[in-house]
Length: 394
Image 1 (cartoon, rainbow, N blue to C red):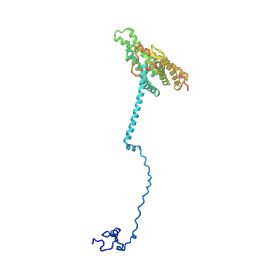
Image 2: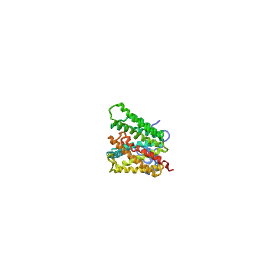
Image 3: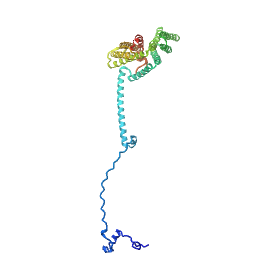
């Protein structure tokens, strides 16, 4: 095989580069066309024109991306966005806390002013009153026999408070016979006939009196006859003041539809007490009985009159289904008994030299401090039931 491209073999066609290189001699002189008899310069096609500048392509339509739920986008939020949201939340929380603290301070200041004027913690008094009211409603609205343990517990606690207050003043009150007699008296009012309740009352008073006399005989401590007699009489008074009046409420409860009468007279007594408190706090200027209860005013009594009469009329019409004028009588009777009961207990506490019967109920004092207007109201409530229960409007 020869290295010469023009050697033997079939003739290879000449390329344009070969023709250009052969067109010049070794000394650089151009060769004539005669050296290439078969070459025609005109046969070379012209150089094709350069392609024109391409027009800018129209943008392809971009389809919108499908909506991504916030839960997917949340991790892609920038750190700065997280910090901004966190700062806004912190600022809103701090502002809300400031408003709550300011409102709490305002309530505390108002409560302190009320406490200085009345000697009661208003907020605690309201909360405890609502709790007792809920228990009372639950026992009367669903199964009325549930009111029996409620009344029994209130009577026993009232006996305990009164006995401790009397013993603190130097009286000799025996707790064990007081509890036994009180329990029997209260339970007899609901489960026995009416005439047996009076028998039970007589036996209860006699029981505590005889117990005290015999206990004094055993003691032989030289106590005078006057003090011994006073101890015996006051022991009987405890049975009449607390357990017997609670028993009257259970006598009323045992009557047909008596639970509504019990609920009504308690509501009227509470409304009268609340109306007197609110009106006396807002407008009280003229003391009603300064030697007995200096904080009770005639303005407060006026608020009690309005509240009790209004409550009596509404309860008579919508709960007891009685004429409105019976509601006026009902409200006025409960108002009178509640006011006398409140003043009577204030007189008793002043005689004993105490402000409250106890401190078991913050904002109220003792249980008897709340029952002082309710217990005496059982008597007119029972009398009005026997008098007006047949006047029911169908």
